[in-house]
Length: 83
Image 1: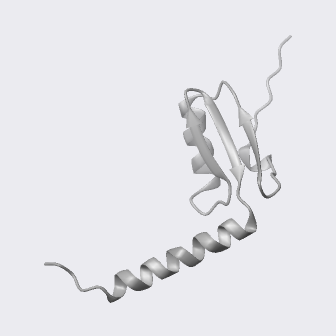
Image 2: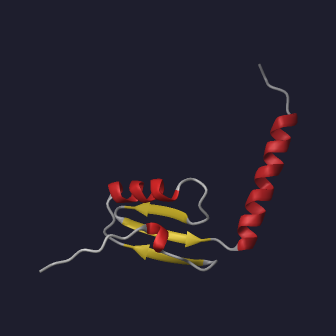
């Protein structure tokens, strides 16, 4: 008898600056996991030919990322449109 375990991607917890590789992941499963976690996730996904890499950036990386995003938005809002 064969049993299968349904993995919910939200059950995986990674420490900052760590990653995990999952093999034999279908494109459909990858897309389902992206929908499950949504856009406001800290974990980064990289999919390549059935291999999914999950990476948790460091807190410093996330802080710098958010700061740069705010700077770019501020500069863009002050730049006149070229129409």
